[in-house]
Length: 144
Image (cartoon, rainbow, N blue to C red; front, top):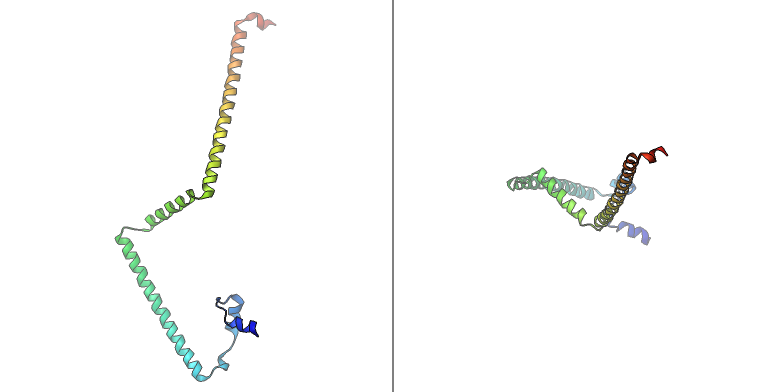
C-alpha cells in the first residue's frame, strides 16, 4: 500500500503510457455534481490564464524585437555573434588545444621529412648531373 501511496505523491511529469492511462480513465462517475462544477470552473480559469500568458509572451516578444531594432541588432549580427562566441569556446576548449598541438607537431615533422626527401633528391640529381657531365667530357670512359 505504501508504494501505491508514494506513486500518487510523485512530482515527476507523466510519461507516455501514464498519460494514456489517465486520459482513458473515466473519473466523472466518481465525482459529485458540485465537484464537477468546481472542476469545470477551474478548467475555464486555467484556459483563460493560459490565453493571457500567451498574449503577454507575444507582447514581450514584440517588445524584444523593437528593442533589438533600436539597438541595430538583427538576425545576421546575432548569428555572427553566436558564431564568434562558439568559435572562441571551441578554441579555448582542452580538446581543441590538444588537437591543435598534435597537428602542429605532426605538421612540423612532415615538413622536416619533406625537406629531407627534397634534399636527398636534389643531391641525387646533382650526382647524376655530375656523372653525366663527367662522362661526356671524358671520351675514353664512354668507350668502355
